Amino acid sequence: MIPEVVKIGLVVGGRRGKGLISVRQADGTWSNPAYIAITGGSFGFQAGVQSADLILVFRTPRGVDNLVSGKFTLGADASVAAGPVGRQASAATDGELKAEILTYARARGLFAGVALDGSVLSLDYDAIERVYGSGISPRALFEGRVRGAPGFIVDFKDQLEEQTSR
Image 1: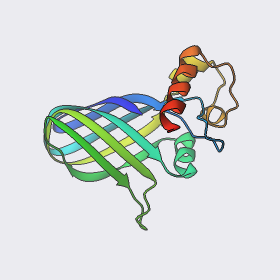
Image 2: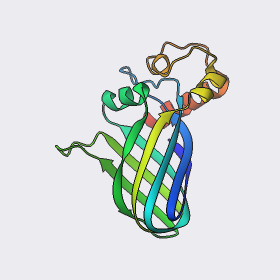
Image 3: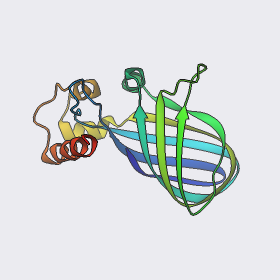
Image 4: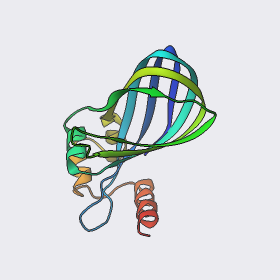
């Protein structure tokens, strides 16, 4: 989840946001979260300011592995967006039309135009180190090899498990 991804543009645009990623384990529990950042740019006939809350659902382990291995490009496409409030669901697909990442966005603000747009999702290693200490890798977090998480991380995981157990 990446709350408040801010997008600003007037011909040239930019996008930035920070959030968390947690991986569901085989037993149904969730891993400790890792911190992520999304950055992007756009160019085209566009104007406005928009803030969106994003939820990205990786349907296969390959997507998470790609993220751990380095920056993950979410894609580049021609897009149109307008309106003060909006909800959008989309899927990034491959040549066989099998979506690997499902996205859900709730947007606020006013943004209109047609632009070439691309975004990169990357791990925020500085934030991970501030929360968990040095030497903790995202893979260790996702595989459940990190013990003694701070209280707010335990609270986050409890809420995540409660909300997804229904």
